Image 1 (spheres, one colour):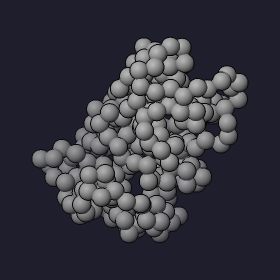
Image 2 (cartoon, helix red, strand yellow):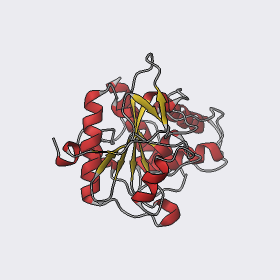
Image 3 (cartoon, one colour):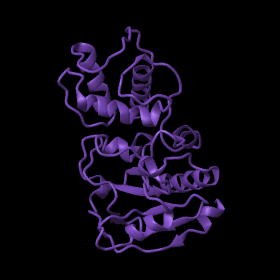
Image 4 (cartoon, helix red, strand yellow):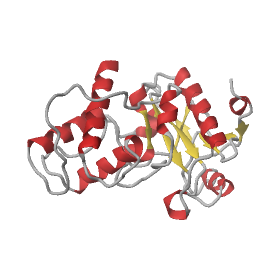
Length: 252
């Protein structure tokens, strides 16, 4: 067990309630704090008037703070959806990762912090029935409201360590993939919407490449194609979507 896990600092928040005993803890949601300092973020997550919290906060120096016990429901996801479930807080554990975010100077996550997040996440998924497809970012479950943990977070390294999904190769599909963008319509758009919905995202199935689909594509790119986040379903983005969906089907 890593030193970060052995030395978790208990710093309780009053912002939690009971979980429904009939709902399994089968999701892990990663966030960034989006505030100027870690201390400021922890203060807010412990403020009863703020009515927000998370189970853990990971500082930039690798320290891990526990704010809410895992058996309780922390209030971190807000209005969100994944794989048809709307009450994400009820079935998830939330980790806040200290980073100023896109508003206050988004920057790379230090290695010591990433190592601590990876160790903590691995410890969590080993103790709960959390499938790889349910290790996601706040932007995945709330793509039109949130950007965190963002395109600088190393999801690939997390998956390499056994937590979450990363693309392993190309899709076995033999159909030709053409780039899709705003206002496109037709069967290719419908296929893309269907694939993203099956994967987990909540979006209309109307065959129209509108703002809803563009927002989901941005969220997908932040997680699985971070080199270019533009909401355009280019050939590479679609290839990754279909390859990951095949992997999800294989694991299900």
